[in-house]
Structures are given as structure tokens and as C-alpha cells.
Image 1 (cartoon, helix red, strand yellow):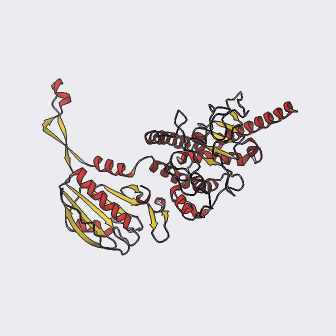
Image 2 (tube, helix red, strand yellow):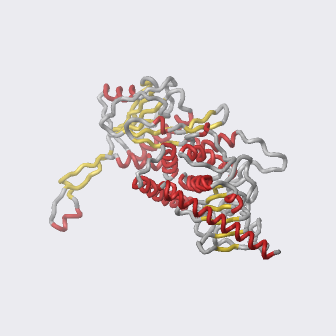
Image 3 (tube, one colour):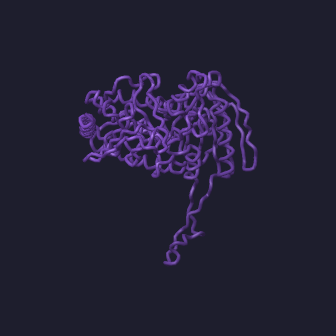
Length: 467
């Protein structure tokens, strides 16, 4: 009887492995973009897992769950897990609650996958109200509306980012190298569970993840934190490196889609942009943009020393620095006090870092409400005037009328307007406040850069409410 049971389990495993391999093969034929991501994710069977999951290294699945769905839904499942990797969801949780983060990322991905023409397994988390939102914004809504914990339950995240269950990030993910005898507390006691590898390299494990919880009603699949090479939670530096590597893989997927003549849907492009933004701190982007726009001059009086040893006399590059920066601040009613405070902090830091000869500051809603100059060493007036509507033309018109041609313009705004001037002949950076925090309800929402993108200049998304 024991032999027959082992045979049945092996047969189920083989069928599930073959079904997943066939689904991935079909995906490779039909969609170069997602198959490029999925091709880097080996399948790992985990019998103790309720549905499926990914940690950015593998796609884990329960064989019974796989065999209980149609062929097209298996393809959709693979796309779903690849989408989590595409969005960097396995690297972005931080200190957020695991279950709420999982739900938020599912809401962020599933509608996009359906819109792209794929089928998903039944009972997925889908809500059109979350379309186009970042998972961080969805998380804030879900977290704010969560029911209070029952007596004796842990509800608030601990300092290590968990929900009081004692497990840290990275402990719940199985891998092909996991010990077959680990029990649910991770103490390594042998409970007789086995792990095996088939001829194709797919791994099978009976071990249940350490802190595996039953899925929420109406959900399936999970996204786990990506561990480092030693199976431990990633450090901040390791996470940053992993995000940079992910950026390369995403670009490779984009290139594969272009080579195949595929048109990447706008919703997927938004996920790509969302992932790109997560790979770089906005403060660093702001400093880099300013540094890259410092004027460079060439002077014969300061020759290029690299070529002097060869008796070649060439002019040397001299950083002129920035003479004038214009900083425009949107003081319309839709910009929060937190946004304005952050704009003031960034203005102060820019003056200290760049040391321009002059900073021209304008407060603008539908007209210029306040104008003043700031020079290095002077304090910036952080009281704001305005709170009307939004029009981007008056600030640029004011600069022209007052014969001020800045070396660059930084415009802090929520981009909630479509009234723009003609493109000026100097660089413009839009510091986009991408989140809106309602102090009354405590809820935070994401603005959609896809519908608010300006017709010129560069955009850096500033996330005041999440750092």
C-alpha cells in the first residue's frame, strides 16, 4: 500500500511538472516579453504550499493546484508570477505586513494581466478600482481599512517587518537546497519529509514553508521576499544590487518583445516604469539630474593635462557651475502641506549642494503668488502663498517677462493640470508628488503619471509619504 501511495504521488508530480513545462513553452511561442522573465524562473514543486508563489528566484507550486486548472490558466499563473518579478515585488516589501503586501501586489498585477488577454485561475484578487496604482498605494488603502486584531492576535508589524509571528523575511521561502527534514519552526528536526529532483532539474519538496498561512478568501499565489545567496534576508545594499540586476533583465525582455514585433500594452509599460522608479531613490535622482546639468566650458588657459605629455595642446573642461536656478512650487489646493514641506527641504539641500549664484523661487497656482531670491548662506522662506487651481504657464511667463533665463528649472508639483507653456530652451525637471495623503481619513493614494505626464522635461517621482 505504501508503495502504491508513493507511486500515485510521483505520478501527480510528473503530471504537474509536465503541465507547467508545456504552459511555459506555449508562453514562449506567444509572448516574448513575459517568457523572457519566466525563462529565468525554474519551477519548484512544494507539496505543502497551498497554491503557488515566487521569490524572484523560482516559481513554487502545489501539483494538485496546478492540475486543477485549465491549460490557459496555467499560462496566466506563470505570467502572474513573472509579473511579480517584473514589478520587483519580491524586493520592495520593506517592513510591510506580508499578507497585506501579497494582496496589494495581486491587485496591482491581476487586472493588468487580464487586460493583456491572459486567463487567471479562479478566485483571484481583481478590482478595477486599483488599476494603474502602485502596490505601495494599494497596501496603504488595505492596511488602513483592516479590521482590528482579535484579542490575543498580533496585528501591527514588528520592527523586523513581520506581524508578530516571530519569523523574519526570507525564512519562509523553500529552495532546491533546503533541508528535507526542516519542520515548520525551522529547527531542523526530521519529520520524514523528502525532497527529490527529476530528470529536468525541477525540484519537489514535501516541506511546508515555515510561516505559510492559508490564503485569504478569494486569493491564490504568493510573493515572498527574495533571500540572498546564503538564504538569509537581504541587506539594503544587496536589495539595491538585486533591483539593478532586475533592471537589466527587464530591458532584455523589452528588447525581446521589440525583436518579436510585439507591442507592449500601456498597463505593462506602467509596471515597468513603476519598477524602474523603485530601483532608484528619488533624492539621488534629483541630485544626479542637477549635477548632469551643470554647464561645462572649455578654456585654453587650462589645457587638458592628459595630452600634454604627448605635446598635444587641447582646451581643458571647466565646470562653470550653475549661475541661476529657478525653483517653482505648485501651491494649488491639491498639493498637501507635507508636499510643500518636502519641497522646502529639497530647495535648501539644492542650494547647499550646488552653491548657485542665485535661486529664483516662485509660488504658483493659477498665477504667481510669491517671488523671492535666495543666495548661498541665506535661509529660504518656507511660508507658502496660493491654494487656488493649477496652471503651469504663469511661472514660465514670469521668468520671461522679468528677463530671467535660468540654467535649469525645477518645478515641484502634483501635475494636476494640462495647461502648459511652449517648451523653453533650458532644462526642466518636474518633481512629481506621486502620492496624495488624506489627513482626515489617513489614506494615501497614488496619482497616475501615465495620464499626467508633461509634454516636455524630465520627471522624478517624489514619494513624500513613503520616503
